[in-house]
Amino acid sequence: MFAALRLLIACVCLAVFCPAALPPPARATSQPPVNVVVTIPVLKDLAQQVGGPYVHVTSLLSGYENEHTYAPKPSDLIAVRKARVLFEVGIGLEIWVSSLVKNAGSPSLLVVTTSDGIGLIRDHIDPDDAGPGDHHHAAGGNPHVWMDPESVATMLRHITEAFIKLDPAHAAEFRNNQAAYLRQLDQLRKELSDRVKHLSDRRFIAHHPAWPYLARRFGFDIAATIQSQSGTEPSALQIQSLIAKIKKDRIKVIVSEIQLSQRIPKLLAKEAKTRVIVLTTLPGGLPGTETYLDMLRYNVLQLANALEAT
Image 1 (cartoon, rainbow, N blue to C red):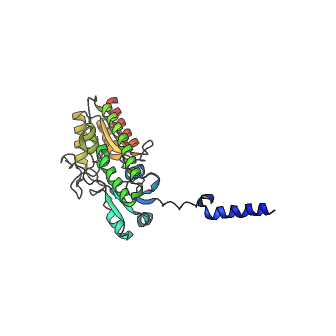
Image 2 (cartoon, rainbow, N blue to C red):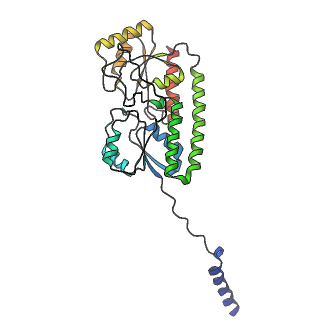
Image 3 (cartoon, helix red, strand yellow):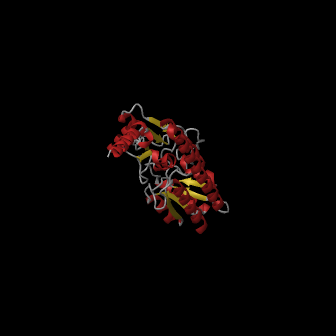
């Protein structure tokens, strides 16, 4: 009996004086993900690619809206108030963002313009092709920079730097994720460049000036633009001029966007005996375009196939 008692006392002393004998302390609760708000879906995809499980990303647009004319909802205001960082494209694309941020009243919110440092294309609108107004923005350039994968590499760098600033403990993971995505982006760019390099006719009519960066990167030729400013339509005289141009130059394809009305492109196609293809400038706008890489592949292949087929 005394032997058993001595054994019990020894065990108690071992537990008290030898920490290794105690069960390990419970781990501290991990840091919650960084709340992120982005203006358009392409930025959501890029932020998720870099941030992984360490970020929670909300996109104000879903992919079906027009990014120029979007009107923020009350839920957008709440999302911005909860966020630590907001990513925008800039260049006057999201003219509604500044008032949204101001109304949210979050002085600590980090606002990052992801287009900083990208070489901009200044729109050249032929007077015979343009509708009323133009597509120039506050910074004097076309804002659809993400349509060029080289521009996306710059945007990704801004996102990575912001996450490292907000969550330096995971800087190595953010940099590794950035590098992995850049490899995928470069591989797709090469694949698509190989696909289009033998096209004999690269001309198309653009519904809206969303395509100069994609055209520059992959060697397409925008012969004319139907709608030079969002929310406007060409006059009857301009429509007749476009029809004459399509017939005279034998242009095979009109590129429209799912985010825009198809009425004018369909009218032109019917009158000029040409073809309309509907693409998307935002991931998620069409089936099979859920990510930026999916969207880029879809747009380039659909356009290349249409130019060959007709």
